[in-house]
Image (cartoon, rainbow over all chains, first blue to last red; front, side, top):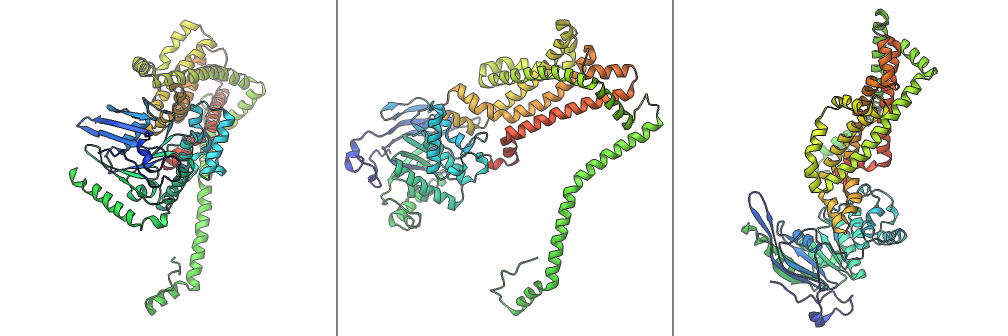
Length: 281
Length: 301
């Protein structure tokens, strides 16, 4: 099931990671045999069953699947927010236990702290890493500027729109300069226009910063627009069904990518895979 | 009143006619007047609550003044006499001294109760073993009617300020523990995740996530504690205080000085209102997120 051969498309922005040589590169993230069962009062739910996945350096990879397929659980386990029953995760060859300082999480619920200003929220990960105040201020300014919010640095986050709030969420995660950015349906609660704008921004940030992103979504088009590879998941038990590569050239634009033959083919393929699960409830 | 914006595409003459009549001078006029009426209504509805409030106070004072004039002054004073007594007591410094004395024991007791109650509640909320161990004790302490403890305070600390302060402290302490603990238990999972995911130590999570997230509960607890502690303050001063509002209330009662008694009760009431007001102002100024996010929880993310 696991596809450890990586995407070759869209990697041209990153040096040393193109072509077949990547096959010999060590993946930045190596996930092996993850099992997770939630024990409930009435029945146990197998959230993840023997999930293995390699994520390559600089790759944009999406986890797609119906709700309840364990994609968010997998992302939380990668980050260390949840513990797997068994299985291992290696980051650049190092076995992870608990939280890694080299990863950052963007939450579906955004989870900005209302008692802190926008700037204070962006600085929270830096505080935990012991970064000095003046340096924190410089970094928070830099990343808020990057997401276009330098004018609202001192306001409380609840005064911002949903899209702006999630921009803060992205800035907060990027500020700790993670090697791997984990994004859990970050735009799921936003309206269409805002979502598309933020997708494009994330694609730009990804190519500028050269980071690795693991992105969870149930929106097929979103996954195609952003990803080098799409991991399709299945529920009951949560498993990886298939891993598809996206070869669309970058930069992709919201206006054009939907009509591309590859998009259409991928979309129908993924949709069919997801639909075939409906009966298997 | 509909607008005419749909007029370009009209299917029939009949419709045109009806639209034209809609835009006729009369209908415009009636529209304008309805707007005016609405504005008038708005301003009245803005004024009314205040007017009603003052009117109610005046009615009560008036009724009191009227009844008081027919009843022997020893049973019921009148507003005018009470206010006169109040000014007299202010002039000779009685009320100021009493308020200062009361405020001292109240502040000492409640500040200690606040800090230690929040600290104990926080430690319990963040340490499962301590929560299990202390939970029965907290239930027990919180359930005990504080008044029952007053004689014990006298035995331990004698009849003086110290006994009052400890008494007030105990009253406020349980309330702050209970509320802080309740707040700790319901800190949003999402906020906890932020602390964990960004690699905070347990200590950092406590101070940067859990305690701030518990602020609404702490303020609610402080309001309740303040009310109870004011009762405790008056009570202990009545029992054995040599000064303070409770003491003068007791004294004037004993000597049937009803006018002064009412004035002293009024002073107590004003002190309580001022303290509640300060707490409200503190919350609004320094912890404005509490109000902002409770009024609009969806935007609170």
